[in-house]
Image 1: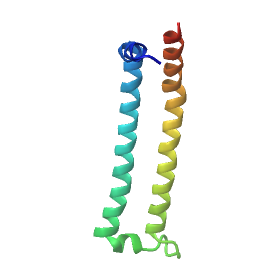
Image 2: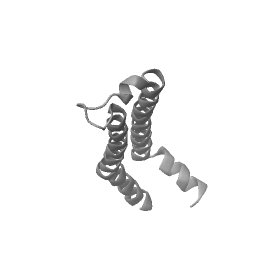
Image 3: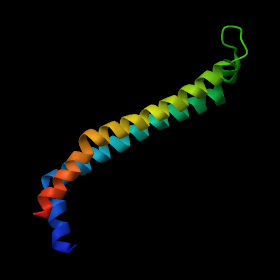
Image 4: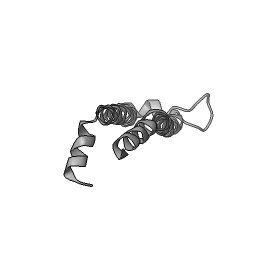
Length: 102
């Protein structure tokens, strides 16, 4: 691909929208995961007695439940990324490829 073609693609309004959409999605999901993970780590550091408390008098602790929730939230954020990518980013990418191939 020639430098002129690359420059024309980079100036294309749909390409700029694609870059904005991907950047916003990536940063928002990254921020969400960082808040979840470091919130859990801070809870471990500053309130270990809370995490060590048993759930309803059983053998499972609050910490185990919190750990499972962190894992499930990370899987959920991955699902959000895939969903948004399939619904918004991929069609926009295909549209750009079709318009710039002409």
